[in-house]
Image (cartoon, rainbow, N blue to C red; front, side, top):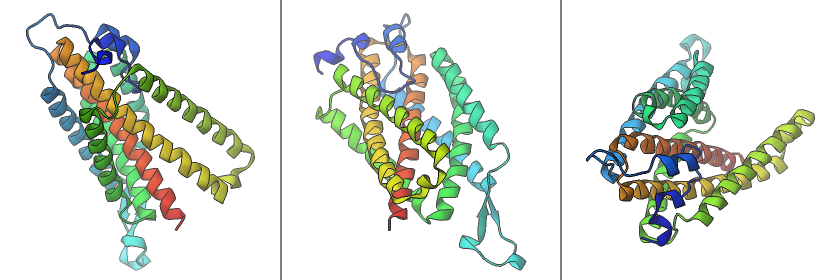
Length: 268
């Protein structure tokens, strides 16, 4: 392991859930004999993702409705609408994420609720994308798994190292994306038709590809943070928070890949 990884306080992640304050104050040697492990973080990440999937199934079922036979058959004989409670789940997930980030030890209980709420929203959004392009959700899930495995391979082999420079680049890239999104929002206010132009699709494709790269690099930084916590002997209860942060990055990656595939489908 490189020198950049020997001290947890020297490592910063591009994941907003893994702030500088968390790395410096929480990833310290545990006062008890029980310390976190990679296996523990992995198991808890799978548990949270399981609740995301469960919430996604619920959201998908709530968003899709079978078309009555007397009305005729449409695409896949279903119609997709925003389900009741969608905005409540979105707002709830947002504030739950803030509560967990403020106090990482809440991640054990609130992380499951967050996963269900976020999964519900993802399920409804996925249903809308799938209604426009059949099979896109399965392709996005498979792509997310593939990107995750590639990021893990790059980290394990040391090809990409979670250093301070990489963290700075990821954070700067995310900040740049936020500015671009704000710029697009402002332009759309004065020229709504531009959102459906060929120029916007090209710009959107480039931005989305950059987002996928940043999400993959953020995963590498998350792996580095987990390794640093294990090396430092951090408290085992922080496994839930690190699992939560990995889940947040994977959700971001999935949504970005879903958008990318949708843009590619529109250009056919």
